[in-house]
Amino acid sequence: MVVTVWKVPKLFNGHINDVIGRFAVLILNRPINIPAKYVVELWNKACLRATADGGTDRWYKFVSLLKCQSELKQMHPDFVSGDFDSIKPETLSKCKDNGVTIIPTPDQDKTDFTKALEEIVKVTRNELDSVIVIVEDSGRLDHIMSNLNTLYTTSEIFGSS
Image (cartoon, rainbow, N blue to C red; front, side):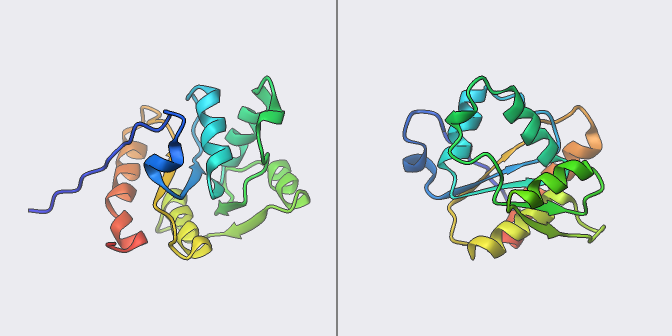
């Protein structure tokens, strides 16, 4: 029997990098309902910041609602990936205009989540300790199962080390 254990560390004790090491943040296409101070801390301390397709719209909406945008060390993601079926065209243009790397991943046999993780591995040469994914369950069983499947396959994406 194979057992997969997902460890969720106590992230917000003021020493996030000591707890999880070098990490990336990935925003998926769901509302960001985590308290802003935690999202900002994660974003600021990440080695890489990425958004997947419509998650980019979610990120910029979150940023627009911040009381103090100057708290962000970097407003834009390092890259946006996806098949671009859910991102608004004006958001994609905004990213291009601000020097964000755009990575088209048109493969319809994988989710934008899975493809974004694959791109994170390529960009970082798999030199991360963790990837923090900001997403909520949405109440849709198909999305929940898809996200769980992606989590289950992370050893294939990142290697078994």
